[in-house]
Length: 270
Ligand code: PBE
Image (cartoon, rainbow, N blue to C red):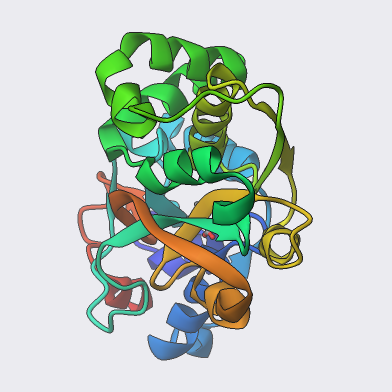
């Protein structure tokens, strides 16, 4: 029925992504802090692909839906969605994505260290690569194309850095769209500098552990201060944090814009 409350219409379900993602832990905190658990609101675990496909169908039918949303991501380009206000500040304000390397990298691979330290781009630049991948271009090719189209930008990272000859370097990442884009771009830049990079996708906890234990050399996937904050806290003594590679990221709950009465997480209770 059209007069039914939102919760009832969508079974008090927030459509989420993979269990390890920081946004899932934050959403669980939001459910508690906004007392949505009083109404049995639940967070459904799935994957980014499953969530965006559910979103796609809901929007096609103009049905209500509440998702875990973040930016940069093509979901905000492709669909008319908006973040819900978060007056209790569970998700935090703007986030940044940091580059994290293993201890000793500076000494062992100073050239790669310099490039990783300098690597910095904008949400818009990251989105260009992400959208291409979403359009079906292979991530490696999308990264190569972006590098070719942005020589001045890449030169900022590589200027004056000596080329190497086949040194192996390993990057780990979680296969979120944003990190598929950034990791492939960094790997390709390193390749063009003479490295032999390998990139390996894994779950978030093993990714942090891989750099802490020096099984991997670097990762560019640390959403901070909140989203990956727990992992950062656990591992910060065992890694080297090179600071932000991107600023202006954002994490929260999102709904289609046609849900005009729902503008804040608090509105989910009504
Ligand atoms: N995300 C995208 C991740 C980080 C990158 C927001 C889905 C998360 O841990 O929630």
